[in-house]
Image (cartoon, rainbow, N blue to C red; front, top):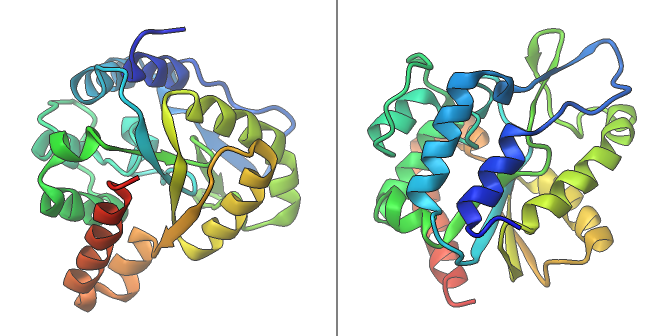
Length: 227
């Protein structure tokens, strides 16, 4: 097994393959097929996870096509990667709503270096999903979920092996929370699961309450530090 959390994570992502037997109407974006993304991912995980310390996992749903679907790094668009993580890239200048919120609360927490020493932001399904060219969540169609579930269980199992603390996991999104609990009943890893409102929901529907949600995130994250 690779010696550091970062190397385990980077090797997992850059070697990801799309699941088989996906219905024709569903598209899967695998950004890790791009050599520039592979290099960026390696730099990111070497910079922030070059140790063997365990992290508390925060699970999103699946990446959007303009955030992790471009950079290969969960909830991180190319601009956030440069401005908040200090990793230059040639992946464009497209901003993504979820990424904007995530780095607002990461900045409020104390910055990327401090945050990533303790937390790892993941996704239940680590590849972007499209339906008719638009972002699609793995749970939006129960039939699609059944197709994807074997791959999801495999991906989840491999991700927790990076070095997850098993006392607690956090779900981003209430519906995602229900699926994460169901999956955890199978992989039996986390003792407790909490949830926070999804960044996209906050930015799209509750933006006037941005400071409230940042405080709510920080409160749970600081409590989680005690585990």
